[in-house]
Length: 80
Image (cartoon, rainbow, N blue to C red; front, side):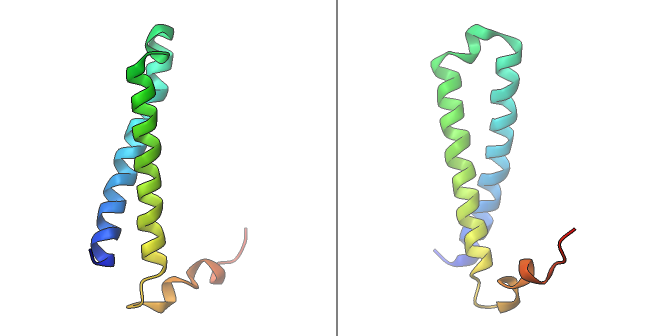
């Protein structure tokens, strides 16, 4: 798998992970019984794994040899 595919899939995984985080947090506000269910536990696990996959895609973006300036982008930004 090329690094551009890892970046693309990582971005999609991060977005889906974010949606699942929101759904999981709203599930706890709707009902306390639903928050402790196996469905909520599976949703939390899925959100965590998809967020981790998004971080892998971000790491692949930072290490892209095509554009070496990506690695130093964060260092050039002023702290506010």
